[in-house]
Image 1 (tube, rainbow, N blue to C red):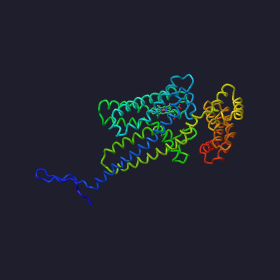
Image 2: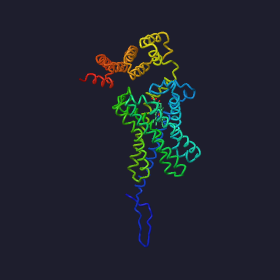
Image 3: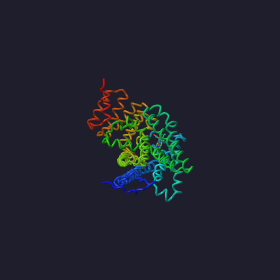
Length: 424
Ligand code: HEM
């Protein structure tokens, strides 16, 4: 039964009844507002966990070596292609500043959204806002510089990297525009507009975080064998889609959220709240995935005091050739087993570097060494098969794909390669 709670009023002798609002409806509206607040609160907590994990990763992996001048240590991070390059002062500076300010930006951004901080410590909010703007602008400009000037060779030679570059550049340009507008509206005391632009700047500034978290949520949702991603190369249709969607989708959700918050419909607020909780859960899933699969192993490698066998062999290949490098590998395994890192990833990474520059024979030899050392690794055979395929040796490529599949029949990359090799 509905009960009117607003008083009746009279006007010019006529009874004027405001539209009756039922207590049930009021309660529903209030529950919807509470649900929306809880939804956004949950999303924020999940985002802080994920963003601080990303900031901690940057600090542990890059910032320490940047601040102590050990820039070569950046190259221990097996996922990057640029890193430290001898003689490239501007490029090295760009990378060091990018990762240093990126960490500050990622760490501080979420704090700007806390209402209590704004209410109780306005001067902190103002200073943190300035730091946010400067770090956002410099991180974007150095990122764009690395993509288009420093990374020129990669972009020309790798179509996947070029698509990445467009997506990341879109993010960088949006960050710059939103940060400037948030700054201008704050200076003009246009608080409502400032709030909107600052939120957009925050979301865009976390585009690179959304990118990483989203990819790992997707991989985990597919139980480790994702559709649309080659987990060896991190290329594929999903990556192309997500390069752009990781920037545009969260911005679209923000626009919807801002409208729903101002709207009256409780249904929309409940739906928005559920969506925020679901995406918060995905953020937590993605953070756990990338933390365990990538960030923690990278941090471990960077802080590993042992020498990288891959780097040592790369230098020997350059100066004395692949046979000498293979001999050095066998010798060091016997004479210095604890001084060098002989993990599977070392030779795998070196082999792929050689494949990229079309040194197929050298890559095959390196992958053969890895297969010898790790005979139970499906991935080691898969890499060797890929090198044979690139070298035009179909029978050996097929044989190694089959070996890879004997160890792991679900190895998607080997299945795809084998189908390709057997196609008429
Ligand atoms: C604004 C937030 C950003 C943050 C927090 C950030 C963070 C990072 C981090 C941590 C790395 C090292 C790779 C890794 O360990 O994952 C990196 C590398 C890089 N970033 Fe960013 N980034 C941001 C924005 C951008 C933008 C907007 C662009 C391009 C337009 C960009 C381009 C690059 C490039 C080219 C590299 C080097 C990759 C390589 O050497 O292989 N970044 N960034």
